Length: 252
Ligand SMILES: Nc1ncnc2c1ncn2[C@@H]1O[C@H](COP(=O)(O)OP(=O)(O)OP(=O)(O)O)[C@@H](O)[C@H]1O
Image: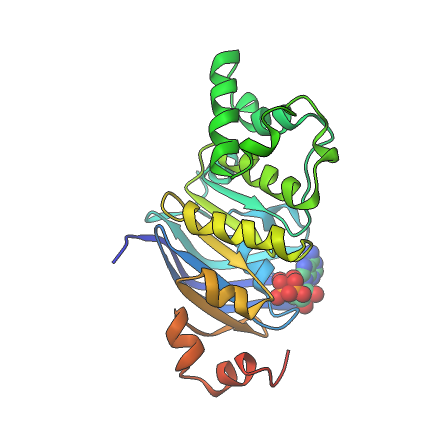
């Protein structure tokens, strides 16, 4: 069994009066893919954002409980949130490249983190684009605006941008929901190779996708984790009737 990357204990999150995450407990293993599924509004994205403290940016949020990353509580007072977000990168639903060149998108993070050497930045750009399965398509277009790439290419560019700062975990919030089936298949293939080096946690509305790409799945409902475990078990032999009802399409 892989080492534990995240260990979440009794996590609660409130947006003002709204109790959006209720006593969530979860363990995520290193070099695995965890899918978060559940109907709209059940707290999947909120939970994902607690793992790199993106909710800190939202007003009026209160969080209790613990989130351990490699046994360190990421909500402890001495935690450097910038460093945390470098270790735990994020890819969003809509590809959001910066309005700059393909190359500048990828080296943006490394530059902010102080890397100045052109040859080093070139190396990072090439390596990250290769890892994001985009290099062959853009190696002659590095100076072009990222906004000229197709949607699927833009999303792989966003993945390359995340990889460029050397993360340990990649959070993905419905990364293929805005993409066509071919681009989706490319991202799914990519996730399969990325998990050899990274831990991946992905929100998806697409149950087939969860079945194809994840090792573990957690089913959320109304802010609670109803069931969490190996994907095959959750899909073919769920313990909770609500899980069964959801995966067989009875609601959501
Ligand atoms: N910034 C916010 N401020 C206040 N309430 C919020 C905020 N973000 C989310 N919520 C509320 O928290 C609950 C959980 O939302 P969340 O986006 O985490 O669910 P989700 O399962 O990811 O939904 P979806 O699948 O539709 O993206 C919802 O009731 C939502 O309206």
